[in-house]
Length: 485
Image 1 (cartoon, rainbow, N blue to C red):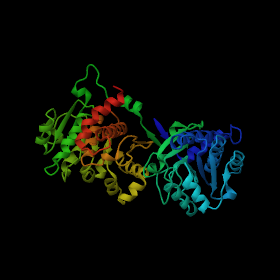
Image 2: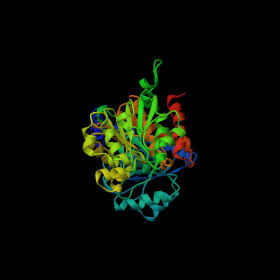
Image 3: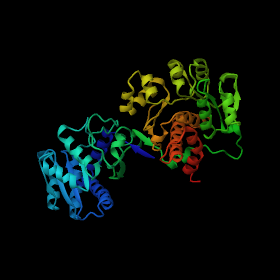
Image 4: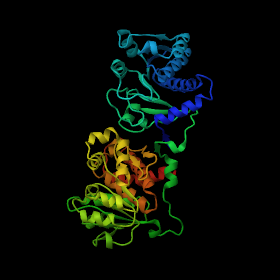
């Protein structure tokens, strides 16, 4: 499992470690890892380190020092290294001296002609402008340098975090560096895993520098294959459909029967032993999936279930939503159900509740603009979870899952932009609801469901358009891939 920590926690760990190390040793560890990563990039883009051209964009903080010491290492291997300090009188003195001793040169003058020409001719630009403590976008003097790097043919490598993005929240308020690779030290920072900042980071490489980070202080968790494989429900020898769990699907309407079909499709592939469907789209469901247990008697009299999914395509059927919320089993609320659910009824539930809004639905629930949710996804998912006393899965470019009782937020590492298609969320609802019925906790059901759904999306699309039904059909492949079968 990958974890991410706040700036404050990282700073405290750095201070604790530096107190035990010789002066400057921690920066040298970071610089060594950074230089090694840059050397690999140069081997790819320039064929070798010797004779390549590197430009360092150097701020006044420790990131600037990391960049200078890494540049010195590259210069000793024969690279032509040019440092551009944005504030020459405040640049890291030891790093500047090391670079000069190694044969590197220092050019002052911000966005002067010489600097622009050096960036235009570079094979690699190293962004050491602002560190993890930076707030807001790039300062005015740095914007022309970031623009020049973006226009150049050079690979852009960010030191610890792309300058101009917020390390703790993933927000981007103004101009920021767009990196091809970010080399981060000690741990991931939340902004490297959450959009919109994530898209500025490019690929991310973690360099272990020995930070003593307490596991309980993590801000984010990102499940990996091994974590998901451990959580997947696997039937035992004595299992039957009821022991495996039965999930109820209350979805669809005369206007949106397809939502019911797609939610059932996801549920049938989610690990539960059986799927009960309740709603007006029973004929469509049974025609496509005859193994579904279809009822027209309403949720309360539909029969035994271990979890409910309510809301996809439900239209204005508030009565069914209220009936499901009254059930004493885990409930997943999606789509129209989010609009129809009484907030007090959600908060009063004693069984687990999993809400799965997209950004627009989350904005409506929070009473804010959609742009505010998309700009600060981490704060939004936490606020929703706290406000409703529920686990919340916030869908989008990076899917986040916040637990009802706080703790680290889970960020999904799979997925593809091709999943932005009608009905995809209905498949996810059925899948995660089935995992709830199979016995997973709400946080795990949401996290595992998002992981499998994202992976299935990759398999279904493979770089080309695909429909939600294709995503559902690819879930077994994702399941096998996670288990290594």
